[in-house]
Length: 383
Ligand code: PMP
Ligand code: GLN
Image (tube, rainbow, N blue to C red; front, side, top):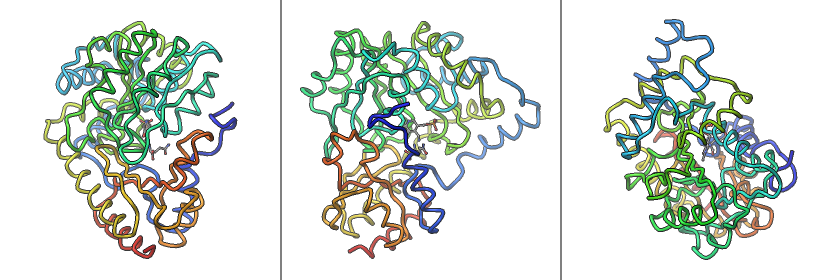
């Protein structure tokens, strides 16, 4: 069981959330909201439990949810999907990622190309699947890939190009040219594109553009999302994956032995959420944008350099001006110094490139305004 650095550790989120609990610090480390999402979504889950949706749902997920996912993809992006064959419900985006990687990778000669820093599960899953991780760096402060480095990373050994857009941990949103180049490279080297779009509705200068809408992409792309971020229900773990029927079948073949099925009362509730009016989705992005601005102003006032994110829960700040040389040590000390928890960017990098990210820290903006303002006041102690 090997991650990018040879071992599998407890996640940075477990470490830093335990620190938050032990010290009573404000947790801007782990990305989860501290307020409930739409009341109709919560009520739909209560109703589903009361009406007996408490046994195993079908292997692909309840049809009502698969239809709602297909309708959502058509409404927001013009993507046509057959809910019977091209959509699969999973235990969060995490299971969709795991099952897709395990399904597509055959052995140690297969490579997965990812952008670095990456959501930590990517390296762990590549390790579990026995594949080699090849990374393309995203550099401070705009975190867009260099086209030459991207092209050099993709070869005939590449089985998967794994994209995360909007991107955790950097908050970057990839440009049209990057998306087009990924599709061109995937076509040329016959790779599958796996795209993690869990922050699709948290884009600040929208709209979000799924890579599956780029010409030539649909037939080789598996798109992943989740209800967790969109409806502030991260604990429900209702995710999904969609794409060509043969690829979805391969993912299902693995998924059936990972969880088999999950979350029967939450499935109709997320279906209800996906059918909410456009304004609900726009309001969520607008609110998070204002939270991003409160957090960013607080970080700047405390002496950090800040890279303003275009989407996602996260803001990356450079603590070099505050004397940080080792972000992990800085984050371990931060609750004691300020009563705030954050996570080091080095948790999302390969050992080879760790030094490039050594003073960068990730903060989550998905907290109440009063919590962010209190965190900003506490961080002022640093300057
Ligand atoms: N991908 C990314 C980029 C994430 O940030 C997260 C979680 N926070 C996930 C996947 C996992 O999503 P889920 O909780 O739906 O498994
Ligand atoms: N995706 C969230 C984050 O990046 C939480 C992930 C987790 O707890 N595994 O903070």
